[in-house]
Amino acid sequence: MREVAVIEDPAVAGVSLDPVRAGLLAALVEPGSATTLARQVGLTRQKVNYHLRELERHGLVELVEERRKGNLTERVLRATAASYVISPSVLAAVQPDPARDPDRLSARWLLAVAARMVREVGELVTGATKARKRLATFAIDGEVRFASAADRAGFAEELTRAVTSLVAKYHDESAEGGRAHRIVVAVHPKVKREEQE
Image (tube, rainbow, N blue to C red; front, top):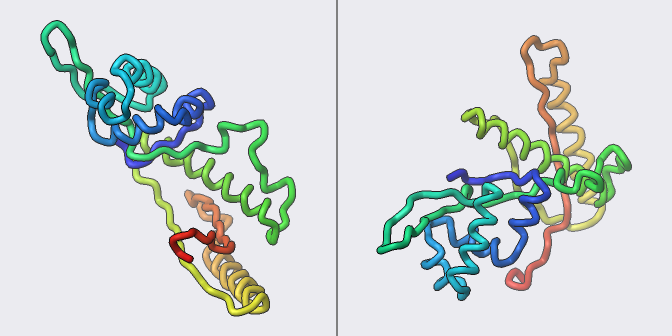
């Protein structure tokens, strides 16, 4: 089982977004059969079987084993990944494009950049998984609390200078065999959750 699978096919995305099927995917982090899942999710075995066939047909679950129980064969399945991410490429015709409005202070542009990152890293993860290779990535996730809008603006200016300086230091356009890497740095207000208030 993979840690994360990226869904790039609209049909697969549609199947995974059904609430019953999403619940079955979550339950199938551990192998289970239609009978055991029916008790967990409160549906009939026949209905669970129907949903499992759809999930299997779209590659979201896989057969682990078959067990004989009297005249029946019980199929034990598990999810193909512990978690799933739907790539923005699923909505290719309407996915956000950072090139449309490159305003680095716009929340819409930030969403477009984030969508591009999910799409590109998703493609890279899918390719690395197929090739059975590791993917070299790096990310920083943190939190900063600004006392004022002026401090936030000052932080953005200093961060821009620091990143620009690092790029100038390490970027080598003529490096034979070198590989270009995308850099994304984002700052946005933290979402307030009820339990944090």
